[in-house]
Image (tube, rainbow, N blue to C red; front, side, top):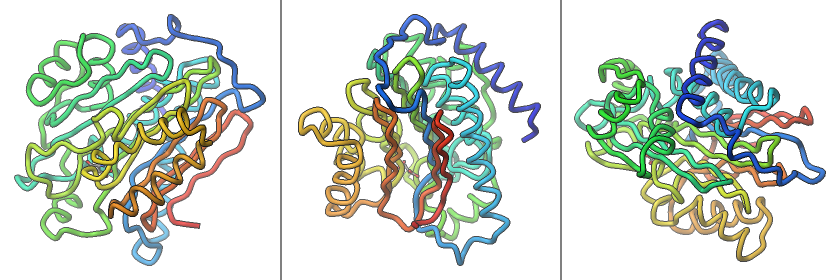
Length: 333
Ligand code: ASP
């Protein structure tokens, strides 16, 4: 995608947010981030059995560049005084629009060779949340989730109701074929293990001390049509609470739902007084792993600490802090 297209997207997106009453100004609460960074954004582009041997250098570069582009889009917003919600959404839109990831364009196919998308968002200062599930035609599902949060009395809308609502909200509606790519069609036909996951997500802390989390996905390749994963389920694939942390998950959704992964990380911080690193590590490396689940999370706490544990061989991931600290990686190190 050209640089110009990104700028246009961000401008349109900011307009949508302000018209959706989501510019963050009314909710800003200066809780202060002590001596930590002023802002942080962390993203993921899915976890799975990723191996260096099976990925060409060119493919690796493509992924790293796209992750970098998404991080930079989010950071530009945070640097200019934007909110964590605006930042995570800018980053997620870039990944939804890229055929590299299993969200928006390039999402995996169901067993009926159609694309069905799930997404959710949550803001840590108000505990507001929005989600859409099983939609087939909202070009940027994350915007659908924001619209539900901002402009409806509900938390989740599914299927045709979600699409009709998104259309009423002025969001772009596309034919299901817009999401299709040859690579994902081959995956569903051949069930390639390497391509199992690929959900996208982002978490951020803004300079007002507010956390936000967002997750967007096509789900799991060859899923039964109608199946809903963890990504749109608040507390499973996504959670944000200013008292603790913001979490976005990727992995085998059924396990993340049963283990209530995202909320469990927050709860361990709130009730057991664990640090973000301890809480996220315990949930991913012990609870999820012991249950047989695979995947990981990106998480940031209210002090700007970042944790990105995963129990697969790789996870597309990265973060950037206002201090200049930055990391982008795919494989286990
Ligand atoms: N968690 C997603 C789901 O189960 C899949 C993924 O993370 O790639 O729907």
